[in-house]
Length: 345
Ligand code: TYM
Image (cartoon, rainbow, N blue to C red; front, side, top):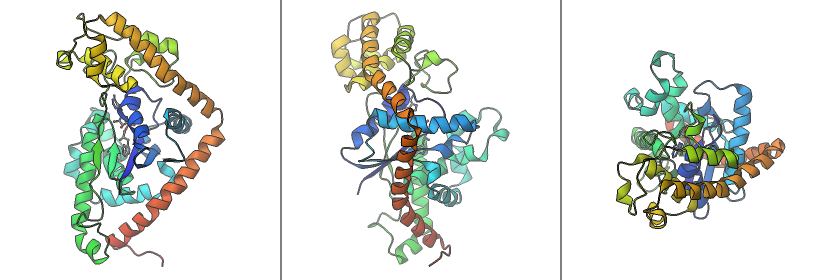
């Protein structure tokens, strides 16, 4: 049985990297898989969040999921904190994961910066909570952008160590799935022509919500004029576009814009170069502005419409949490039995 799980942090407005690296792939997977999409509010508070801003961001990310095409009839949308089993399994995983494993996480090093002594314990333990998100549903496939690859490897290590440490108990209780153990090995799905969207100001830096320059990213809520200005200002090099993909090597800005065009238009980079190769950036950028506005404006409009009715958004999250919990509760019950906790009977 194949089950998809993925999530985004409600820390600020979503940007084109979130959209092309993850969200568009999530929408596509609904046709073939059972999908669970989470707004990971517990991950968000690993760094300080103003409470009112957090509440707003949870609803905004929920609206973005729906506006981008996640269908709540087919898929589950919920926020993490409403399903308490995430915290419970995360604690068990804190006790399975090794300090040495977490010490290797590059995202912690980036986010904690120089003042590591002052980072929250939650930021350090973040990847164990992420493993719990996925494995609480025994999810097999996890569509994410490339920056989450290392976290997914850690989730696989945690699943394997749990299966080994408690192999006897899993066997005795008949809770193994075939010879795979209790937890599956979740597969990262890093897909599409834009698994790593780069900053519009610097093709060697990831597009990110933490970049000080708003011109470095396109936000899902940007209006048409803002999108146009940001693309026109985007850094490029002086050469014409190549007609083949290998001509993009060593040209990070060109590669990024071609990847963005391909992602927005559901094409490959080769197809985009087939059309625009040999031409100047000015013409290509004009086409990219039209395409970006055509694809993103309806999403922004739909988000605004949805956010006018906060009650409806909260109802989506409440319903999703119930459906998520129906899957999570029996799995968490098994985990407690396996570990040896005593539960009410
Ligand atoms: P987050 O909130 O940073 O990002 C959400 C998703 O967007 C992708 N992404 C990008 N893809 C391409 N180019 C970019 N510039 C770019 N920036 C972000 C991310 O790869 C991600 O897929 N730890 C996760 C959230 C999480 C999660 C999970 C994901 C918590 N639990 C369980 C999957 C499964 C995060 O911080 O994503």
